[in-house]
Image 1 (tube, rainbow, N blue to C red):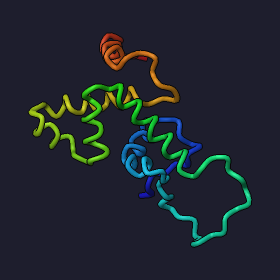
Image 2: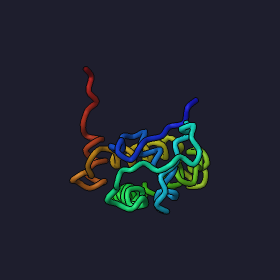
Image 3: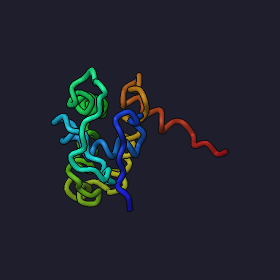
Image 4: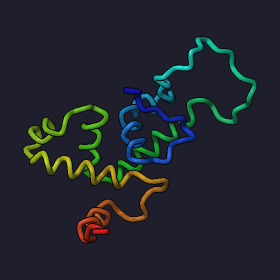
Length: 141
């Protein structure tokens, strides 16, 4: 199986990308973009002649800050997401530690991930988002 990897220009905060960003959040906060696991086949390749207007650490730090800002709006569910994706604690273990049903832990993690995905931040609170999702009937078409 080929590992997931995205170039910074490809980040649009899809669910798969957000999960990947969360898994690499500590590295991003240090200003380092995760290396492409497929490799390029070159070692110590010479730098190209293009000029970049930003320091190489800026983009990873900006994306990490955006993920953290979105997570901060998720209230206590933020910690479930961090435990699951950053600390890599399985849902069943989280459920046992928190004396919650595993189904509830999964629901809260999925709700928070749905809230933080998308090109732009949501214009409404996480509480409103969760309430709206419960009231809207499933699309039957």
